[in-house]
Length: 330
Image (tube, rainbow, N blue to C red; front, side, top):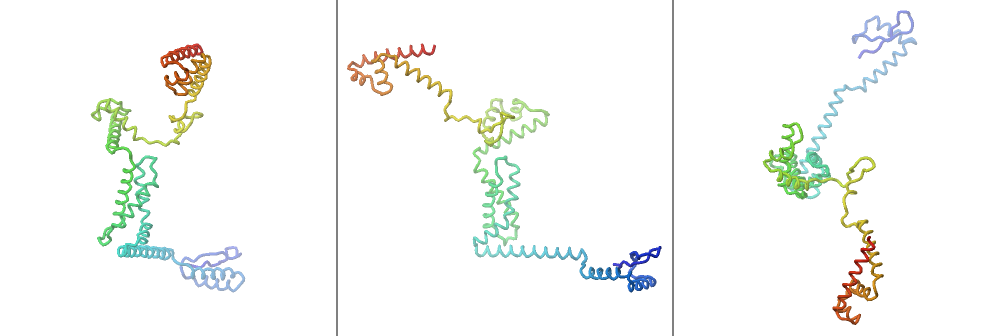
């Protein structure tokens, strides 16, 4: 690095900075610089020289600094690798649970990676967190069954075990038989082939012919495949003011129908009014038979008549009630 040297400009005014193209200054410039440094105009040169000297002491080449950081990272990576090897050896000798947990924490990112890859091809209702939970059990099983002395790479072995654990858990939670899932995939592939060939939506008859089925068999298959569809109850349906969640549109079989409730209440009121207009004996027979649950023989003992007479009274009371209710309805 060449030091900036003040030289006088053409008008003989204040000196201006110039940089020598080589490491050595000409004799004339060196002499002029020495004279200026002794005068007041040379104070800036002394300051620049001191700053440049300080910079030279503190400056290091950029490549040297980068190499130093790279060597530090390499040493850190080697230390981590050596620590993992020592941890595997200690776990193989003692089978201690604490050592296993340390290995699980070290290789936990593998579980997240595998779960993310599998989750991309699953429906939206399947949570990645559930896949990660299943994958952790696969990682633990891989650590316990891995044999480092064989010289195999643990990451490759563990990823297969994690993937298998996630798939096993998904199959266990699936309520749809695997045969139905297979038929669903066949239908999807057939639809893709037909739409690519026809450049339009395929009809049921065309799809049935592609699958070597009849139209009735295809519709039965569609009915089975409907059971495999899962939707969220909080999904919104409709547009504008009619927007509502799917849960709000589902009927509640156990809830009372308000219309039926009003009709039943009105019918009871009309029946009570019709019973009140019966004669005393007919009203007693109806009350004891329908409200007190007495038999005709027991009602005969209460009224002091025979059972056949009670039967006649009951028939007459029912006919009168029907007539009165018909009159009320008209």
